[in-house]
Image (cartoon, rainbow, N blue to C red):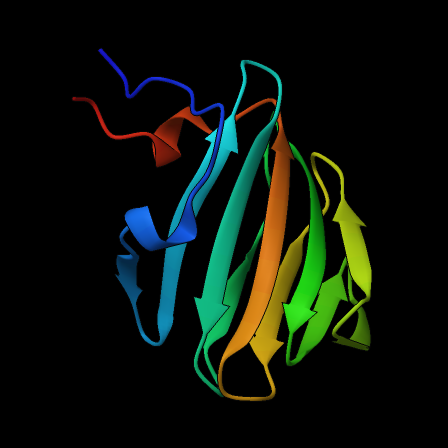
Length: 117
């Protein structure tokens, strides 16, 4: 059984999940077709380039700066900017500032982010 969907996300009640190498995340909330995740990066931390088979991803830069590369095109994004990586597009990020934060959204939800209970 997986964790139940949350109607309300309360940051102070949600622990960070350490992913290693300067990255940690909090799964904020989700439905069957949509998920929101907060991802925190130390300066220089790398979101390794990858692609999704079934997920579209839109990420909002909530804090700091990132070098974002999508299908070989690199751009520096700052707080308030966003990017989209649809299924099959190779994408990755490098945090240019300490305490840089992305708010990732996925459609459909990432079941692999929801540990079995």
